[in-house]
Amino acid sequence: MKEKKIDFVKCQSDNFLIGRDQHYEGDVRAPNGYPLSLIAVISFELIAEILKGQIDEQAIDKTQKMYFFSYYDPDDYYLDYISYHGTKEEFDFINEGYVQTKTSGEHEYKFNKQLFYSIKTSEFNHGMSFMGGEPKFLQNEDYSALDDYYFIGQILGMDLPEDLADLFYLHENIAYFYVKKDLTKGLFFVQST
Image 1: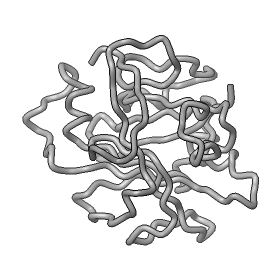
Image 2: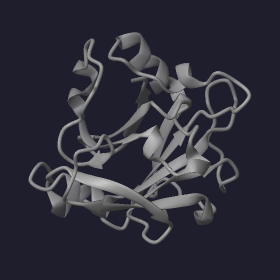
Image 3: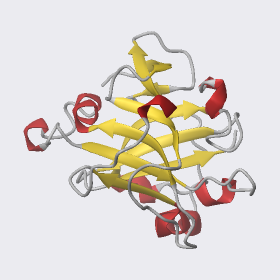
């Protein structure tokens, strides 16, 4: 899919939701036992649209969703739990479970949609928040670990609505969303700009 700019509107569509629910129905925890927050939900229908021409759309169950969970503690410096700058150690660390993804095939998570915003797309884009295309401003060390993933989109913290200003710890941070090429899981991480 060609890169498309994104805007945020109060929950109107379920294709891509961004927000934070710490009290969703389900129990997803970090390795230290701390409950993770649900921060995004992306439909497989949208994933298929973004990856059109790269995947076999017939092999995708477009009724499913991918849930993205992230470590969030407003009383702690949590940026290190969700950051990845291309080192193997960081990749291994975030994959230990401080950010996690689940598909609706595993469990249907019930959450408060009023805490989420829908992502609305448009063709015009000169910003840092968009879906499709290639990631921008990815700070490169060694990204070979991402070879098994498709890029879905990125969001600049300062583009988020005010009540989500600290979702990526600092509003200057960029969050990147990926899905594994076999579509079994996703990947979310943040980089400081």
